[in-house]
Length: 186
Length: 173
Image (cartoon, rainbow over all chains, first blue to last red; front, top):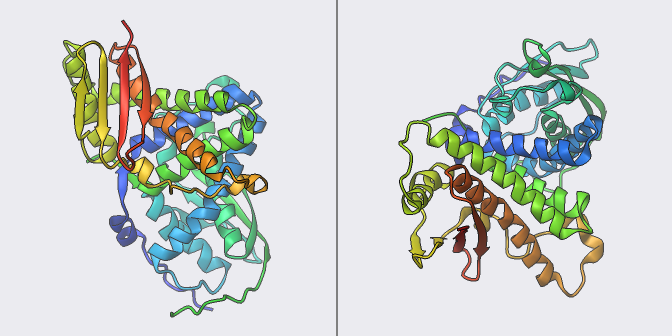
């Protein structure tokens, strides 16, 4: 099947209400810092950030579908492209690249070279196990679950750990075929 | 214009943060949850004001600093200024935003997603409590901003005229 050319998220991003990224970046940073103080264990912070992201993804998917005018994606490949090109752009103003597909076409990587979450961030030695951007993996997982795709999402590259990019590995576990209660073209 | 993200990112993260601290980490201790949310705001206000005042001369008095919060600082955050500033000239300032965005986005009767089991007759009370939890964040931002401008203070919020919101700043002598 020929992959559909993914739409760009530029136009959608231009049309949503935007705020200066510092507020977002610093708010997220302050939350992570508070969680580190309160929960003490870095592992637990990773888990909670992922859970918070999941809750956010579950809600953001509605806004995404409403504002992006994306029609149904034919397969996981197209879905991944849409997340990378439209989803990331629409919310964070940056675009991810989809790469490293496995042969089955069920696992791929979303690569971010630019990431507004981490501006001004440096991990102290005590936090080396922290996946600072773990909220993003949760968002992707939560949003996909709302469109019937159960996934596992994990980090394989992280610039805060010295890598050259952020790479999020997304593995499709199960896809529940779904009958929508509404028509695509209402 | 610097870098931007969708406003819904900020909304989503703040709403989720408040919900996590109130319903998960400190569900039995609302005062502790409030203090944590305020502390997060404080940190944000402190860091933002450092960035926004990098090229400013130092403020010479309290009023000048408060005016900066009402104008430049508020505009950076909310794309509008504070609508009304009052003072008793004895260290108390009231900053009123007639249409506070962060109140407008929380519905008067918010979904209690994580606590459906407790949908008791005092739902109104709960909604009010959720809203007041949300207000600790901007109160913390203002306190953090003013403190880093050298003005230690206490900040509270009044939303009896929502969507207007009045922030009451009491400067510590």
